[in-house]
Each structure stands twice: as C-alpha cells, then as structure tokens.
Image 1: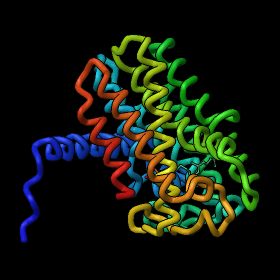
Image 2: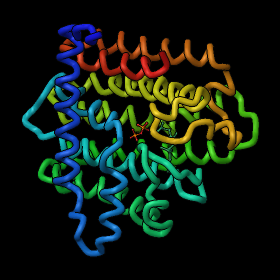
Image 3: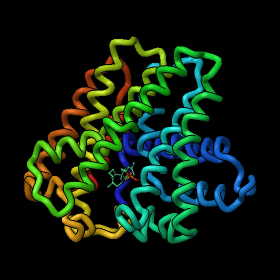
Length: 302
Ligand code: GRG
C-alpha cells in the first residue's frame, strides 16, 4: 500500500530540515582541520567522532532560531562550534573511565575505533576547536564574538555541563531525589540547548529582550529531550538512539524514569515540550519549523 500523502506542513518541514542538516555537514567539513593534517590519526579521530550519525539538533536549533530574525552575519561557524563542543562531551563520556561505551551514533565509539589516548585527545581538540572557530569566524566583531564565547563557555563549564556530569557520575549507585536529578539534567543536557538558542539570538537581529526567553525555551527543550532519552534507554529502542539501551539501569544511574516512573516521565516530557512549543509560537515570527522540530523530539516516545 502506498504511504499516505504527506501534509504540506510536513513536506515543508522535511525540506527545511534536510537543508539545515546539509548546511551543518558542509560547515563541519569546511571548519574542521583536514583528515590528513598532521597528525592524521588525531584529525581522523576528530572527524570520525563528529561526522555521520549525529542528529545535529543543537546546530539546527541555533540556525532555526537565527532564521527567526536573520542578519548579515553567517551563523554556520557558530553552529559547527556548538556541534564540536557537544561531540567532545560525547567522546569523553564514552571513555572507559566514564561510561565505557562501545557504541555511539550507531557505530563504534571513538576510543573503540581508534584507542583511548587518541579519543581523549580528539575530545580535547574538539573542545578547543569550537572556540578557535568562534574566534576565527567572528573575531572582527568583538562584541558579538565575546557574547558567543561567553554563552558557549558558560554552558560547557564547571558550573553547568561539567557540573551535571560530575553529579551524575557521583550519583551512580545512589538514590538521588528529584531536585538532584533536575540539577543533573538542567546542566548536563539542557544548558547546551539553552546556549544553542541564545547563540542564535546573538547572531541574529533579534531584540536583546529575546535572549532570556530563548534561554528558557532552550532549557525546556533540553529537559524534555533528556527525559525522552531516559525513556528510550529504559524502553530499549536502540535503533532510535544509536547506542546500547538499558545502560542507565545497569550503571545504577538516576534518571527521570527511575525517579518518576515511566508514565509520569512521559507526561513530564510532553508538558515541557508543549510549554516550549507554546513559548515559540508566541514569538513574533514564523516558528512553524521550530515547533514541528520540538514535536518530533517528543514523538520519539510515541
Ligand atoms: C564528559 C564533560 C563531559 C560531559 C558529558 C553530554 C554528556 C555530558 C554526556 C553524554 C551522555 C548523555 C546521555 C548526555 C545527555 C545528553 C544527551 C542525551 C546527549 C546525546 O545527545 P544527542 O542524542 O546525540 O543529540 P547525537 O549523537 O544525535 O548528537
């Protein structure tokens, strides 16, 4: 039986989404050092980790938010910088000293494909690259460049992304309360989503008052996304997440599912997603792509 005809809205969404993804892939290829740059093993590992398989959610959100009030500035290098930083965190998180994972983005993790030392250094280099790219691309505009660097550094630093990772790791095998898990999710995951939207605002013509609202929407998307990730891990949909499932439970991790139970976690994710979509829709611009994207994240747990 032929598939039902796609609605005009979903066709437009798919086309726009493909377009964003193609731009991100091209940007990654342009901005990362060539695979044969010396030392080639390091640069191959960096490209291996960043290339193919990622959903590119954070850079797509940055570009889509920028597109609400586009400016003369090219947002692509910032989108690539954000994806490099996100990928570094995944490479390090997969290392034997952390989650010791074999699969990521549907294939072997960086340290399994290369070796532990190379993966550690590739992660370090991706982190540094993200700030080099921002400096190189936006250095001619010091105010904008500083805002972008601060936004990304703040989200990725010791009080947010790394704070979340540390408390997540320390909490393994212990029973944390809902506040502690909320802290972990807000910082390990949502901070980078918040930064994605805020960076889109810094690059665009959006009025400065949009910044706080953008961060808030990013926070809700990130929290919803993490809860969905926890649900997928608990319900074993490895083909959707591109990595082994059941890992959270096996490691004694505290998740939205272990704290609230499956049904309440689902309801919480849907509520956050709905709030994020409603806040987007109240924006004085065409937010159809963004609201459809947010709904598609929630639909992963249908
Ligand atoms: C090692 C400093 C350091 C931080 C690690 C990001 C992170 C913190 C750990 C990764 C493990 C994890 C479950 C993080 C929560 C956020 C999350 C679900 C990341 C995966 O993001 P996706 O699904 O990945 O967007 P892709 O591969 O699609 O880019």
